[in-house]
Length: 178
Image (cartoon, rainbow, N blue to C red; front, side):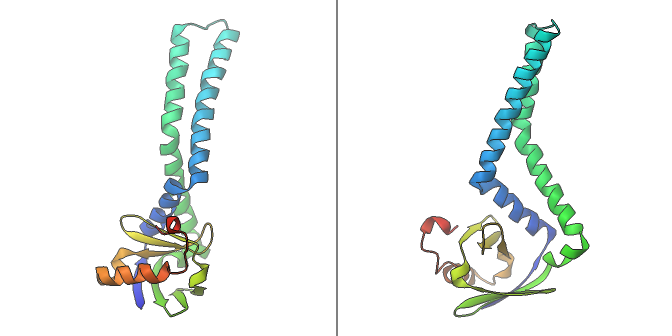
């Protein structure tokens, strides 16, 4: 099977957002940042107002509102930073080959990704897990790196299913398949 497709800036952003939204370590970090920031604002603000002799119901309400903004705004802010960092990374001259025309060739024992300044062969056994969203398959070949395959690369649902079956054949844990 041979698939021809283009990886766009949006495909790369979608991959990073998928990782951001589904990685347990990232989600735990966001949760801890949300709680820590909100607690710091409430405790720090209350202590400051107490030290200045201005502690009252209004100052507590203001710092509680600021803590709520920090708590609920942190995921939005971090998501925005992910998109901004991806744009920054893709704009560097040495990363221009990340996007562009790709060819993915599936062989009996391996698959090859060919693109501008790129020709990498992976054994099916190297596939650690797969993930997907509404428009892509992500074939993880290590903890942080994945081959992005947009659904638009497939001519039919049957070809898409055949790809999935072949690419996940060596993954024993069903939880790691999408």
